[in-house]
Image (tube, rainbow over all chains, first blue to last red; front, side):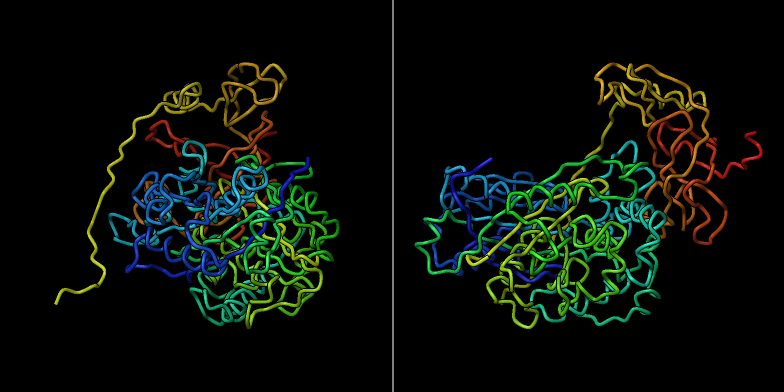
Length: 404
Length: 156
């Protein structure tokens, strides 16, 4: 397959992840992130030909077709728009759609906005906001065959993790805790982080158990936020005063909603590997650990990060724990993972999370990542996300500099 | 002076559902009325539980088969949290063990729980034989049945 037009990320607009933004509604959050992204690209709203909106949940907003209100608020009324929702792969699925619009020659400049409020829904009996979010999110699970016994996502996904641990004896509880320590440490260096909290391996292991092996500090945050990126064709990018970072590979995989129960795939997450393979093939990545400088991935629970190392081909299947022991994925390692602090500590709400992972890798490739900057030698980075019922929605994006 | 502080109001979206299980209704009726667990078999020979009206592989319409209600654990996880007012609290105490269970005679696995009566971690392991028990009060939901360890001796 060949596409005639190259696509670049030319502008970033990131709002910090917060527990809540009580002083901003979702249109205002989208407006502010978009203004930052357009400023960064050096363009105005009249230069934008289309809006793509990564908005995960209507239930959390108490609003259907929310993108209509945002599109008008941004000053884009009348131009094409598209809203994407795909669990915790919403933002990366949306990026693929935005990429396709430009690559296919439909438009030249797309504004991609991920936005989500999440703290407005409450548990009616307790008034608890986190529980309100969780209750809404829980019906991602099959309402007949999963949800009655699994009202909590880390439990349903955990069945794959425990199967993996039983099959390979890896990762260990300590190795998983080490990942949480790493990501909390990285979040300290990120001005967009929601949680800056230094924790030790022992503190992680001693914190409240949620669903074994996942403890409190090993589970992602609930956040609100917004993140926007501007994408442009090569011709449009050339006219802007900005360093283009090219989208050289995109891949998604919509997998089964049930874990594989036997054979090669027991304890595996094929949506992650298949989406990565598609993106690698398109970008010409053959040895991910050698070819990539930096990876942002979805550490929705810490153990998921370790399984993702394997599915992305950063190490052999079963060797993710050993990769942690090597320190390879630390900021100072040869393949740094989640320099942003990831979903565990930077923040998480589907939609903004995945767009912010793209923004983080672009910032790293530009050399703009401040105290969390990693060395850029090959000029290439990867975003991998996973969401949906039982890690069924995988997406991967390869980003690269001109000199890659 | 009028303040710019965030102004919050309470709101509700009142969604009440009444929906059908469609072509797999028989599974839940058999569960509620007869304390039986059914699967579906298709022309290509695959037996599924959860059942499907149509086979995703050979596209044929399936037929119902009765299952023994015994099986083995594929994967298990000890869970320490369920939102405060969920129905699940009526059925079990925390922590509970969520498990993926392959029922004997099927090629698939079903989400359910294994009750051990223990608060200790790791009482349920992959490969453990289990058998289904039925609750006295049954409503035609997945929670109408649960699993306990099945001493291998009893199964000959």
